[in-house]
Amino acid sequence: MFVYSDELDYEFHLNSILELSRVCSTEVRIYPLQGKDAKQYPLMNDLVNDLNALEIKSEIVEVPWEFQKGSHQ
Image (cartoon, rainbow, N blue to C red):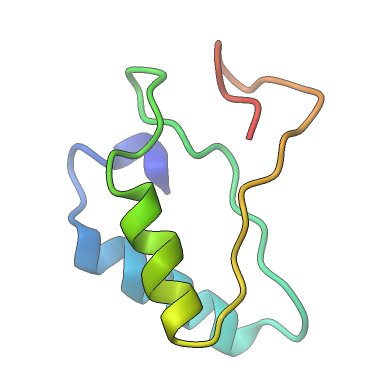
């Protein structure tokens, strides 16, 4: 989802995660959090804060692999 963050706006990301949360029974895992430029989605903190405000627990977790250079979350 975040690989195309340069083409998809914040509303898309928030609404997509809300829908994933709605249809999944316990948790949603999204990987990678980086765009094509290997940089983290620039509005990630806002997204995490908005999800938490909606009582959807969200956290960024380190993983022991990389889909692309620097994508270890």
